[in-house]
Image 1: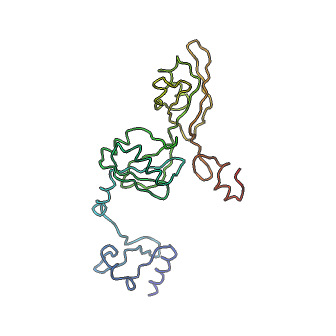
Image 2: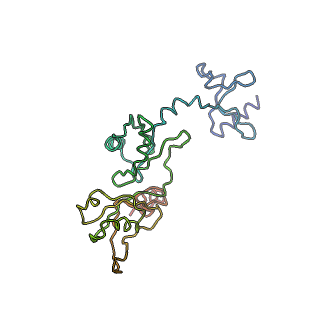
Image 3: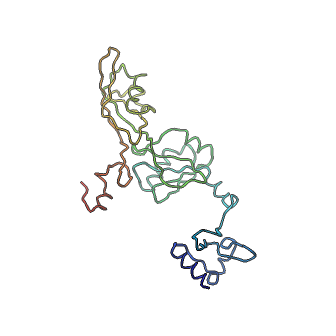
Length: 267
């Protein structure tokens, strides 16, 4: 009896719920809650011995999770970098932008992650191979659902950003334009209007940027005569991360959480 008290006390210290078979409801005493060992029923909830080692834990098999894995296998999990809009706004975005791929539901987690389940695995793959998507100029991070994944926002190192390159001479509106954009980041694609050479006041180009790279406000190159040409760069969204709260769209000087924690005021 003394050993039982020691075990109970230790488990309480570790914050592990205690299942007492003598007090447990009969409805709980089934194969889902009990582990048969040595011809007798013992609690499945972790018992911790004097060395604080976990023993006698419930273990599931691949057959146990088969149905749920099959259900979610056609899914992607997503979040918007630097934004956490309401559920109805996200749902409207998905229906408007991804309807062509054929999906049957949008599910939500409280941490800004949403899961989109497609009717076919091929549809999921088509979405993953269709390039970048933006929500109000912010990147939508899309990952294929996997049975072993944690549904958390992962660290992002590279993001797509739309930039505007102004005052570019018409003679550079061709093969030169992607190379000029390459002075800012890795060229991805050109916006439809500049590609059709209709709106010529500026070129709107998507580039890949490193989260920690310096963002130039101007880029320079030499023209065919060796003359220096300067092109201003405008960013429709900047990948700024906060070192204090790890959030997006602001630095530590603008961080409200840091200001509240430190007792200071946000400027």
